[in-house]
Picture (tube, rainbow, N blue to C red):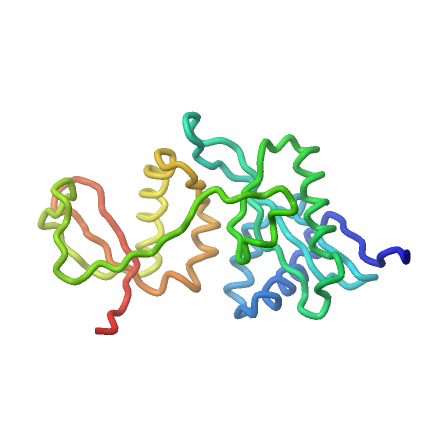
Amino acid sequence: MTASPLVTRTLTAEEIPAFIDVVFRAFLDDPAPENVAAETAQLEPHRTHGVFDGDELIGGGTMLTKRMTLPGTGPQPVAAVSCVAVAPDHRRRGALTRLMRAQLHSQHESGDAFAALYASEGAIYGRFGYGLAGHRAAFAVPRGAAFQSTVDISDGRIREVDKETALPLMHHLHGKVAPTRVGWVDRTKRRGRCSSPRTLSNCVARMPRSGGTPSIRRATRSTR
């Protein structure tokens, strides 16, 4: 059997831009400068691996140092696997298998108790030891639906806010709620800004008239 020419190793800080380029190309995403800068800012080079074909970086993945809320124990350290990608013209050659193996060895060496990921294709990762931890559901509530009696519907003012106003409120609220919700992961300010260029075009906030905690939601358009 011919030995694979692929090599997997930890990336240097100087190689992170090339890695981000591979990720954006693999997901057919928009490599706008602000998006690239935001993604780059959240990465930890010493926890980021690249797969090379000769001198060419053709895939990779990273692990973010996070805390996840677990049943009965509260927030615990977790290796949050992210940005797993292989260039479109180098797939089906074992690059992902090499990457996953390198990550698992790295987790063992660093003492990570467990790893978690949000899979774009869930069927891929079972062979690497990952399993289903939860389901995601989306619900559409008809106009005029009544709130439950426990929901605070005070006369606070509703107004649209820009990204700079929304982000501090989001970090504050997430920090209070995440430790009480199983499966929730903490979010750094860098991560919030990473998501903001593409997902925070505008938000709607309910600002209490006196005291209390503001609430915030992303604004959406109705098609009806």
